[in-house]
Amino acid sequence: MNSYLIQLANMDNKNDIGFKLVVITTEQFEIIENNYTKDTNIRVKLDFRFAADKKQKLIALFNTFIFSANGKQFLLIEASCHFAISEDSWEEMFDKKLNKLIVPKRFLQHLTMLTVGTTRGILHVKTENSPFNQYRIPLINVEELIKDDNALEFEEL
Image (cartoon, rainbow, N blue to C red; front, side, top):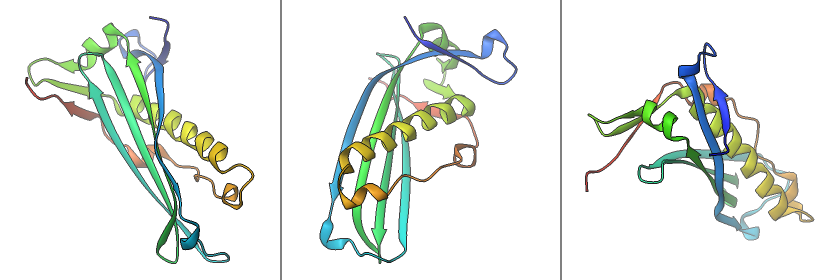
């Protein structure tokens, strides 16, 4: 697998996680011009979701950003990035007994930063040459959002 290798924590080999970006999707995109009000405070609401595919050894991150003015949504974008995890790294994170993938917070923070940056680019392209291009996804400190390792559970078939 040609992949990136991220080194976590103490740069020790057992903390290396091999991965590569395999899919980028725009899940939703909408502009509601009638809800847009100039010269008002703009609010941005964000939401993140994580998912995993045990069979394909993928981790997906979905992020949604909703821009609103005077309590009315006028711009929505949801995008996702799907990352293939190397076999060795998956096995290290996978708890067979609990049927859970335990993903280290630093790795999730890194994947989240990549996904947010990708979503920024999608938003720019979709709003280019329009008045909505002035609205950008703000800088986000993912360390404040993701404070713990995350356990992704799988259902038994």
